[in-house]
Length: 184
Image (cartoon, rainbow, N blue to C red; front, side, top):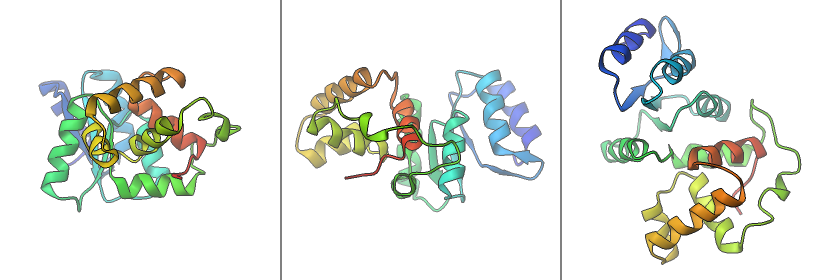
């Protein structure tokens, strides 16, 4: 598949659990295909694999429903990890891109008023885990880095989502991008 039409035909024919999508298509926008997939095949989770690293492009892909964002130059191991994350319902954003997005703060989708107030109800440990999740780290990576069990990380993640009135890590990433929250 190399274009918008073929992408739509393949999604309709196969209804995959995970679709790998580039944003650069010769006959249309990958963002358009992403929105189409969200409407026509809601069970299909999309992992963007592209050369585009601009925070605005990444933010738009996330807003359009992408569950993951990976650079074409990534290793096979990172690709496999990203597919597994997206397949399990988790978000995956290449860590170098996530960091740039957070450092930039301002995105094409705008900023949230009073972003500092968003995290005020989180404990110091929850804030630490929040930032790691936004950077695209997995529960296992966070537990290893912070020397706590994966179950403890998962409990903190659940608490963070509850306190922020969010349903998923993807919503958490979207909110963080909108707010322009930076890594401490």
